[in-house]
Length: 371
View 1 (cartoon, rainbow, N blue to C red):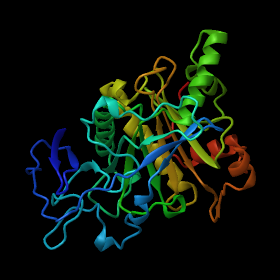
View 2 (cartoon, one colour):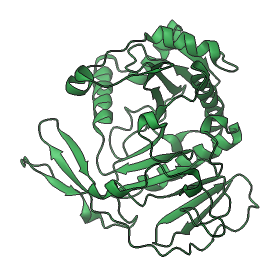
View 3 (cartoon, helix red, strand yellow):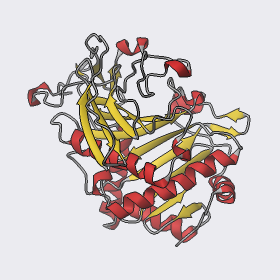
């Protein structure tokens, strides 16, 4: 793998990851005349739910579903400059021009968000970082269509960015994710994901770690490891498994199609994976994604979310895993978050996890269940 860091016209960083060490020089000048990036975001504390909410009104003007010949994530070519100055690339990662959180990587430590203290209306600057991960230069491809070697390169990009962003003083959690499909709300069709470096630990992560802490106090064991062991012992919801990874539909799945991928070994985050575990993940993840696309014989809209340990706390409780789920509940029907889900946070699933796992196993390429 070859890694090359460069700068865009407005000073934002772009990092290229290439499979071939002998690719052309990546220090290609960005000739665009760009104004400064707007970073007028702030975080506000919700005292009722004990959560931070981000306000980023400048994102209203971000690019929205441009035609393919105006895609900002494709490589640049004569007469049309994009966010990627190079004429070709394997994987490219750059700072989002419309970030929910933004700061320089060398931001002073004293620029921390304000303390909650006893303030009802506590707020602070939206410090952090938002990056775009372009999986391939091919506009018409998808992650599920790439080779295992190329997906492994995407994993290396996630590892690199997690490691670098975790070293930023005010970043508390790094979240790598992908939104795929207009049904999810995607505004750019080019195959890509994103990375958010949050200035706080997210509500979902705090809740999971609280559960893990209570479980350890009762049993002296790790909650996530016990979940994995129980799913393997039951077997009915396991979609596929490999030497290092297990993919299963959780027994209390909230979404019509929802698969969790766990490494067999407890690690806190992506950088902690071995080279073998990273390569093996690329293979099993492709099996899962291709099964999801084959389920209704059409590209499945999905959200893919990496659950990593916070940067500074509870890393011993955490267990790296990937959650990938879809709002599609039938070939021509979507799952909407209506009154119970949106108002009360209580999900009602129309598809049982056992049905979903069986359907995915039936179409998964080279599916194998190893206990």
